[in-house]
Length: 181
Image (cartoon, rainbow, N blue to C red; front, side):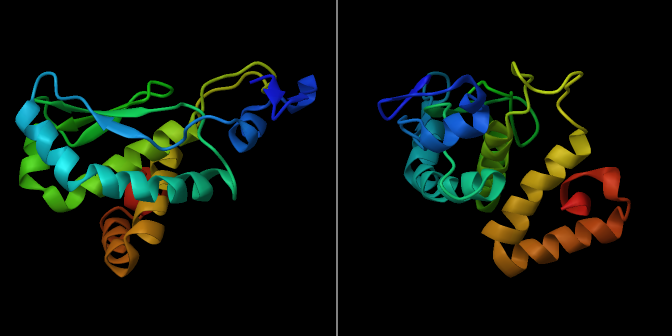
């Protein structure tokens, strides 16, 4: 990533934002891991993967500006029998999607995966050159930002209504998710 389109990049331009905007890396390719749960993986592949892939550029643009690129490469959606909805780990390139959630809440799968992809784009890991001490920032803010992307920008009026209901239930800004969004 030190060379951008044939140009040797000065050190001051090696920031994560610079690399995102100019790296020639495939951006929004999602695959589904069918190793443990082939039936669920097949459903995700058939019903959801293309929608997630089509909306992913909007997530990146909203979180990091026009023309931004996520340089993490391919994202793997991993079905799991754990409880919950979905989660990811920073820099890991994987979204774990709970089987029960995918089966019982099919209308939420795309939104949940976009929410988790938003966390991958946020990528708040400490990097060389960032101010010290540097930490990931408050969790409530990270969650509120990606819910803002999902509810207010991807899901339209229904999303705004849902976030507003969240905020009424938990009116404190630092509660995260819809309240913060």
